[in-house]
Image (cartoon, rainbow, N blue to C red):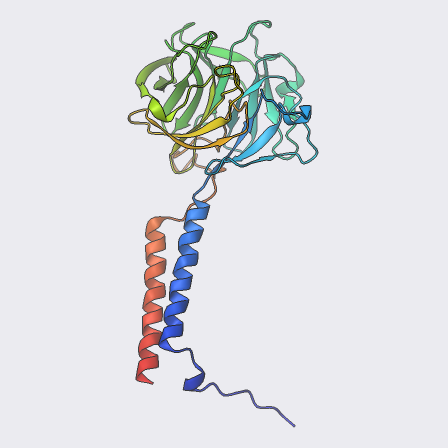
Length: 332
């Protein structure tokens, strides 16, 4: 015997209250998703640390910048293979590079294993003397050009990502400040200064504007009270153009303190404390250069955000649909 499909009657349809509840629930899901997606993450190496497991030092970590929670990239606990990997940067092909100060080597770092390998297959490929600390930072521009800074020399370099060789821009010391890392947004470059000198005294905890053509820098302003005393720092933009920093606070005042995560206002230089993470982080790479034009723009490693206008349109459509269903329910 053939079964007839059940007939849906008006009494079986959701009432006005049910439709309103569904709309509210949907709005909550959309807004929650927008809030969750808006939190970027970045890569960092703790070239210093106080972990009992030596594999946890000089390792590549994935940091949630909103909470400070961290995940070691390799679940096998593999360190990078380099002793002082300070600078990290991601190019437009989503390749992660770094600079090791101990061996003076430009490296590629696997985002899967966390292991680094010298570009060109040659260690000590920067073409600078061994035996002295230079303290490096690094960033890629929209044209995929790699730039490296040394806070010890107060100098800016262009890096050849095939051979590793550095070429100085300007003259030795032309930055005029000990800039420990740089970040690039469109045509603008910014640098963050060293926080404390070797004696533990305040040095240059400031934000600077960097001229990539001349190798010079100009002061924007101090980071302010939002940034606790720190040694070196990592700097990077997310895809929305927000500037982030991670500060290394190991052996500050004789204590191994948690690294701090900061948001920085590029107009004033003022920093806002967002959270803390593990000890010894002094590098940060969120994604490629931020806010490039359409010919060079790529997807950043920041978690995608939901545009507020898109949210408003979606919520409006949901409300409109819910109200129409409510009217139908009342009329029936």
